[in-house]
Image (cartoon, rainbow, N blue to C red; front, side, top):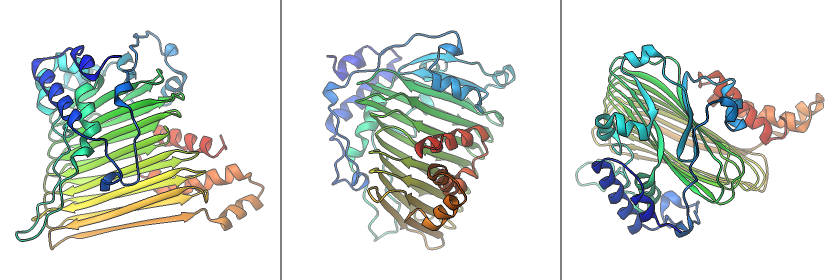
Length: 450
């Protein structure tokens, strides 16, 4: 059985990256797995024997789409993406190239491993800059004489440190200043080796006044005892626009842990959508650091947990500059004996005047055996702001269900209609038709109406 040190020794790369990987692994070994005593992990426990983890097996490149997993083939028939990567575990098994006109403008889209080799200067400049191995110190800048918020517990960085040390591949997107990429770019990440782990990393960089959409999809069959650990870094320079979509639909038995963080510059916009449908346990963190004055962050998410699934979402809207705007809308559905967790924080620094921030989480309960925990929070250190938060949890409307049933509609179809209607105000804000259609298909299968 190989140790993490053995695995790290087998990874090739430049000296600066090797040093960073070693430093991250050393940090990993000093940290405990987050426990329920840590506020941000109060309702979620990850039971993992790191000594028993083995890396996902290598996979060979395929020359034809027909050799890809059926789930990927199905998605490619109606996807919005203009160019894409397919990764099976640690390896890129299929790819399409960027249109020539984008390459001529300096746009780069490749896997991260290749980017390290061919675009080392850009990767070194931005890699680990938004999601480092350690937990970022997101302590609010508070007024003199007051007590700022406590820094995150160091153990919250346990999985980030592992991802920083042992990532094998992922996607790299670079859009130069003033360039707009009209068609979305995307990656399809699959796993096919049960009882293993995969660590991936996505790095998207949009320079000043650039624009790009990136769709990051994850899918697999049932894989008992399998772990997907990842990090997503979104660099949004001044006046740039980035839309990032994550669709997690792992198979039963997969534990998904991913930290996604955006660094948003002056007058820049980050639109994010997090969709959680698969896996047995999923922990997704989405954070927006509104660094620049006039920056904007839209944070959308939807999830549907059934059977014994446990979905945990942690969010942070950190306003560090004045005149910034953030809007968070998370909507979830719990069925059977599933568990949903939402913990969200709006932080406003001293001097971040004219902040305009909203946070809303709503949950629809389809079963009396399901549970949902919602913890919306505010921490405000400026005196000229408009901030609000709220959370609601409610059962399905029995009158609406009865009305549909009385019109001859089967219960499964009626529930699918009500669930889709409940999630519509999130889906209605997503201008990607094939993504919305795909999500609606997953919902239909979840309620047995497919």
